[in-house]
Image 1 (cartoon, rainbow, N blue to C red):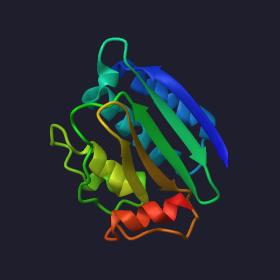
Image 2 (tube, rainbow, N blue to C red):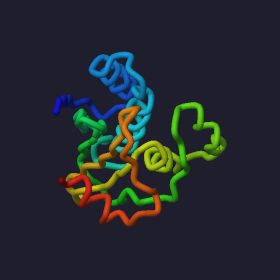
Image 3 (cartoon, helix red, strand yellow):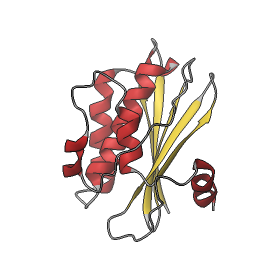
Length: 159
């Protein structure tokens, strides 16, 4: 396993820096666009919906590379709202993102995360939270059905 982490100020302009860092860590490999998308959405949500977006706030992006997947995790300062599961679209590549309702003002970030990840979840509470997602490395044959219960996905990823 390879692991990388970096903290960022809880300001919207740092989301672009998150993308740049992901690209530097992973290079120009196949699938990097999906990892960037997940990291961007999770970082944006941390800024928008948690104490990380308040003055002096920060968030931390973690990236781990396993044999068959990348795990992106964003730790934030928690908040009163809780990220909630949504019905996911089936998206196999960046081109499939055309299925998403781009006219929606908000609320599609976690839908995108769920659509491009094999599993995702939330840990923590109002004081601190970690939102994570697994993105399969292209060529990997392991993929969970989006209809599987979240508990099954948690058990699979805890191994």
